[in-house]
Amino acid sequence: MESHTQPLDIDIRSEIGNLRAVMLHSPGAEVENMTPRNVQRALYSDILNLSIAQEEYSQLYGVLSKVAKVYEVRPLLKKVLDNRSDRADLLKRICIGEDAANYYEKLLDMDSGALASVLIEGLPAEINTLSAYLANEYYALYPLYNFYFTRDSAVTIGNSVLVCRMANKIRMRESIIMEAIYRCSGNFNCAITDANDFHAAGSPVVMEGGDIQIIRDDILLVGNGARTSTRGIDFMVERLRKAHPEGIRHVIVQQIPHSPESFIHLDMVFTMIDRDRCMIFEPLMLNNIQYQTVHIVIADGKVTSIKSEPNILKALKRLGVDLKPVICGGDDEWDQEREQWHSGANTFCIAPGQILTYARNVHTLEELDKNGFSIMSAKDVISGKSVIGGKCAISIAGSELPRGGGGPRCMTMPLSRDRMEW
Image 1 (cartoon, one colour):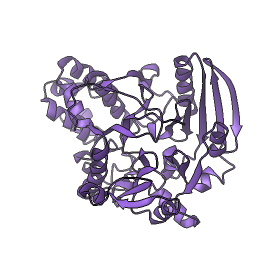
Image 2 (image 1 turned 120 degrees about the horizontal axis):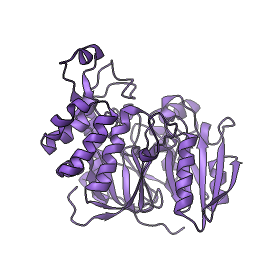
Image 3 (image 1 turned 90 degrees about the vertical axis):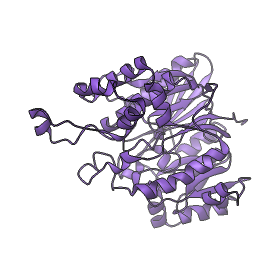
């Protein structure tokens, strides 16, 4: 459903408003272009079975296409590449950033469809020089193994897009492609801030979309961990301060551990699931004394207060967002750890009280059931056997997808939601 005549007005002011449009990237050959030698560099812990991952992803795609317009990265990228000038600009950024200038002319002359595939799936190196031979690298441009996690490379806030400065070089091309799609495809109306334009290579300023949540129009929740630095948050606060010279804005920062890898982003331990409910990993969100929660207040374009809070829930309650937690994994600590590891807290709202989650996390589903959510399978929703309505948790198969390191929120970039009345 990527062909739309009128440009879409980007508008995201909550995590839970009725979803109107979303951007996805179906996992493809790039996921299979991985070996045990490069799995760690790819930021994976294991190699995925592509055919099973695609079958599982089709459930996510199928449900979302029933409730919203779905835009796909690959055809949007091809559309950008159809313009010779935009193609040249994009390739210059990629080739310079990845030390692949020798391939620029070859890439420039490729068919748009083939070039889009290469930029996503990888470009094998030409071993025709001593340097290339001794480098012992199969790829001149590495595959974008993580691109099906579209959440991380950019963030939609209000009618603006923040193109993220990714924490790992292996993912930087995702941000470059996403910036080109927003700026050049003609499909979107939005203001764009590219964090990469403000900072040189090696800068400690990094941020990723999995750490950034829009709780309310005036409340931004940000994780500070392995992928989003304090300097990255400083950059976001500065941009927010300048964008809102009047009124009050709140930024709540939650420190999260750098390990284990399942704590990679804030949305692995906290997500909104309704106007008065959230899904949490309890040991970190409620029983933690090591990692701080910090509340930053911006009033009339100036930072007027920075103070510690007991936890996210208490900070939000003071701002009028009173959330009852649903515990990922239920009451048992072992189940909590197992199901958090498999992205049990990483839910995605298609409407208030209507979420996508993994079927494998059975104890989390039981907790949702106890909290009034009816459980239905994605297959039944897609076939029409089940009709989405009321409070519900739509479960998608997840034996392979979670092994990539994320869940439904990680795999979705919302573009437009209905505004909430709080």
